[in-house]
Length: 187
Picture 1 (cartoon, one colour):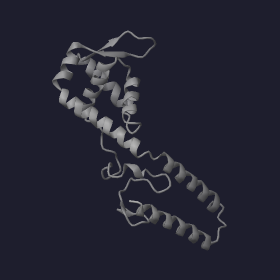
Picture 2 (picture 1 turned 30 degrees about the vertical axis):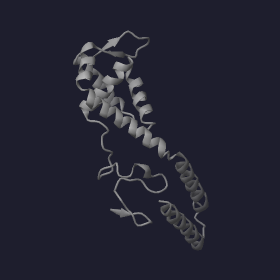
Picture 3 (picture 1 turned 120 degrees about the vertical axis):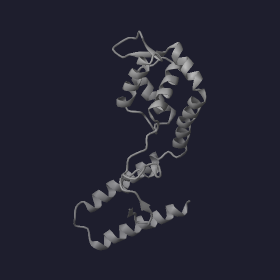
Picture 4 (picture 1 turned 90 degrees about the horizontal axis):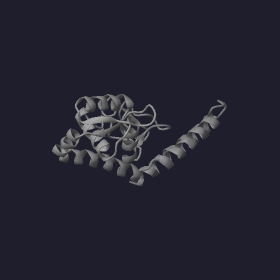
């Protein structure tokens, strides 16, 4: 484990201070890869629930999940579209007539029955999505990301020339260290 300047351990794969994602701390396993939000059967239930609520295209499903999580999670098309194909083959959804080339799906009677048989699990999965969205809204990192971006630009413009005296570099490093300590005392 590498340590950051404040001495706290960070896992390999976490990005550094000027562009890192400090708001996902604790959600990545060793190696820096994110844990999956759902396993295959869970995603099938979530997609089926959303389709049962309102017939949708694959892209609509991705955006609906992203909206439920306030942008914190959006399944990839490479996971959604094969899952839709599977749900269709299982007879739980069926394609509806729609304008354009997009396939819109609706839940079949078998799909609605499947949802009612798994109602408790569906409720837990939807609660997981809503909780992630609520957490994201409570801890909106946008102002911090903007400020970090400003710092990155200022450092690049100041130190990118290469003609900065070492004492100025030490002064700036001390300012950043002091700010880090002040932020940690806010806890």
